[in-house]
Amino acid sequence: MRIDRRLFIGGIVALVAGSGAACASRTGGTTASAARNLVSQEELAETNARYVYQALERVRPSWLSSRGPAGMSNVRETSEAVASVYINGSRMGDIEFLRQYAVRDAQEVRFYEPGEASARFGMGNPRGVIEVIPRR
Image 1: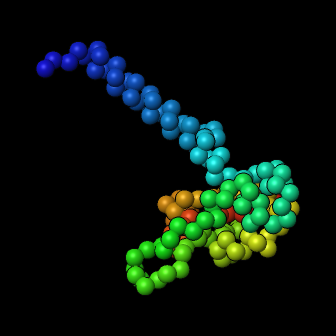
Image 2 (image 1 turned 180 degrees about the vertical axis):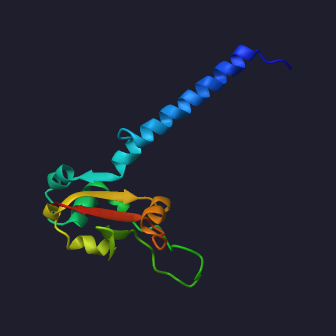
């Protein structure tokens, strides 16, 4: 089987250019996934909720849902794991903390998937992290 060299090189160039554009969109502008993992202060305020938990129930309820036991290390464990909450790099607890954190005190709220959460906040966040960026 013989491959036309121009076609082969053109395909490689297209592949490299496409992967570069994909990398640029992840690091540069806002992607759909990045927008899905961020709630701005304006969006929080539009919910007319008093506490962040109530606001997230309205705009990102999937962040608050449990996803079953975090691991198989203890098969008898029946508690369902939920996301951890961090403010200024400090762990505040789980999502129940957000029931007392006022919307007016939050600049934005971000969700980190488990892999991202481990890289940014360390191990021990098997259901991801909800990070609250406080207002200045």
